[in-house]
Image (cartoon, rainbow, N blue to C red; front, side, top):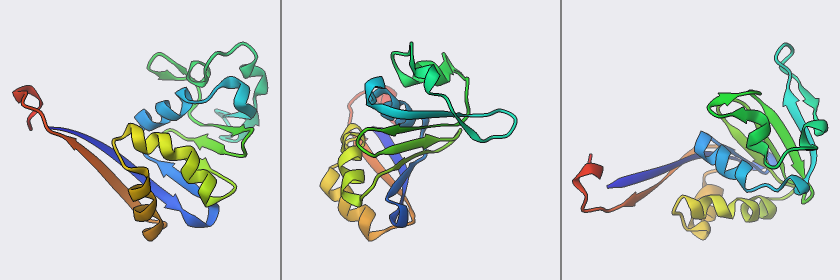
Length: 150
């Protein structure tokens, strides 16, 4: 068996998802075209405040290339705003996706649920029934390979 776990929290008052996974952070960042970004900030190492850093986008081809060098984080936190009104911010452990409305939030994050083997409609129902709580979604893939059994 193989398990994929998606841990998240839905903050209903701010139309925000908090994803607790570096894999999901990478998935989100790899899904963003540099041309979609209207604002970019990185966290200052001394003050921990986000400082405008649009100049870092000039020669970049993808976000992870700016914030990470192989396995090393160059910035522990960063934030970006997209043309569609979505705001994405990260710290070392959590990626927050905030949208102007609940519908936009779910529409934007559909690709994440699909990537994790989830039915987006079922996720919407589960998440809206349990706002402001941590939710763990799991996909289990059956396999005959004894190497994957645990």
